[in-house]
Image 1 (cartoon, helix red, strand yellow):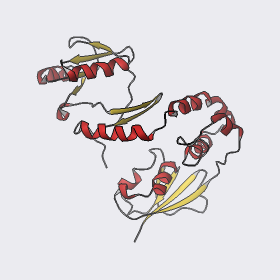
Image 2 (cartoon, helix red, strand yellow):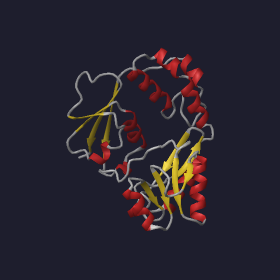
Image 3 (spheres, one colour):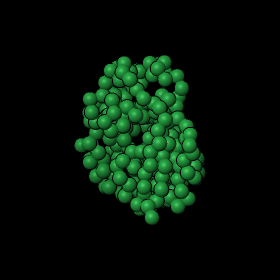
Length: 248
């Protein structure tokens, strides 16, 4: 399955961004850019990004200069789009539709706002502060990632929806040993995955699958998880190995 856009988080503090247009739409974009610390400039200034409201000619001129343009309410002209945002301190969730339905993105944002705990930002800061302690406890990067993944999983010591205490977790025991799990996929539609299957796909270090497992299912796994078409070997290796099959 091809991504229509690659989501990126861009640091704009102190960077010039062109803003062309007036009215409520321009005011909203200006507020967003100011929150991100951008320096808002006019069309003739040097910049890599631009936001344009109702000016197709300006869009063409900027694109000719190599500027990446967001043409508000014109997704067919956009080089990038601006997502709906849920913010919890350093944790930012972005919901995009490629510019085709800002209303849908806003509705999803409102739902997610109610799900995410206010303390997520504090958890992120605590994990950042504990980087040296985690490296000392798990010198191997793979072991460290598996330990963190297990702790952040539902019911884990650092479950983001529970009472996470990073210091307490680092002072306790953590099992980063290898394990094998198996899931049976009943539909080619990834939306039909069970919560358990989706969670395991997100945690697995390597995925062994049959050749009839759709790419859309495998795309739900981490990007750095190894995909192997074939059966799980006798000694699959450290971390979590996932065996994926389609139901017959």
